[in-house]
Image 1 (cartoon, rainbow over the protein chains, first blue to last red):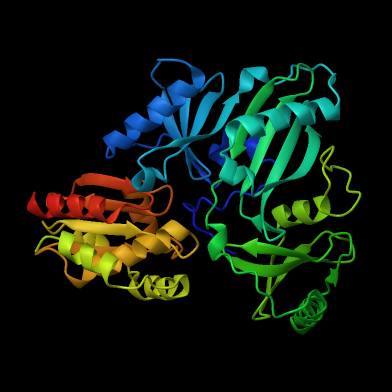
Image 2: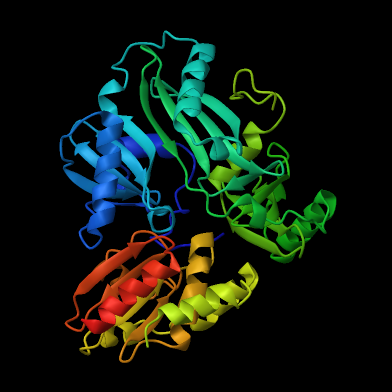
Length: 295
Length: 138
């Protein structure tokens, strides 16, 4: 929370991160172009091999980027063809895994969407079932399905004990709204295993709300709690927090306020788009709900 | 002294510290002024730099290995823990110089100041042992 490091893989806002990647994430904090893996030759070989295998090619990649903690293996930068590889588990398991793919040539070219939301959801689910390791799939819940730039973007979010984990621990698929082709997908890195995430609470949601309101008033802010975003228990790192949104009367300035689920400490931070997206999507009857999802 | 014994001791006899304890150790051990790391890498000695922060599990696991390594480092080897969350100019320079794009990353710098090896993510104790011993003997 409130972290500012440019190297942290947890910095990228979840909102539209897949499409940002597709559009060239170098303009954003969690991406670095042209990283050098030559000081780890065995890892470099493993990364290239995994990416080539995924695409069914023997072509050498053009370059590597860093995107959201993963290595983007670029096969055709101008066309936007790349494979994302998680290399951070290599030292433990001796293997790397494909955590994403994009082919920007598959973006729709101007035509209106022809496939239905239900069809798009089916395509996205197929990718989810095919590409995601079972142990990660078990912790991912459908979050939203939204139209965006001629595609449908389906998103799953990691939950532990029912609480969504913030910090890009998501799975996203972009489906071409005209042809139904998969434009790209990206799996986030899970920072902490679920067994070390402690969801024991000593503060109720109501008490958290009161603490937050008091803290905002004590700070002399004119912001009020927005009920459109329900108070939502979320996880940052491995700690539980009640998240809520406060805004000025004209809604121009929003603040993300958290109350620790055990200690009750209040933090007033800048707007958190990821939290807003999650709280909004989890609200009953939300517009962007995933078709067929029970949530 | 070779490091294998140090890590064997860690793995066989020491209880694994809690994540809270490891986070506190990280805060305590992280260099306050990253300029000392920059100076050390230009002082004709092998240097191991662990870049880690308290917000990832693998980082905290690496801190445990770092603590064991720090207790009995090979002769002449210098060890530093750098927390990228400390966003001062010297830390930023280190991140840029060594191309650290994710944490944890362990950078092994040889006596000539060149990067001998870069290890991404958590490392098995045996791997770290071999790499650090090799660096010390170069």
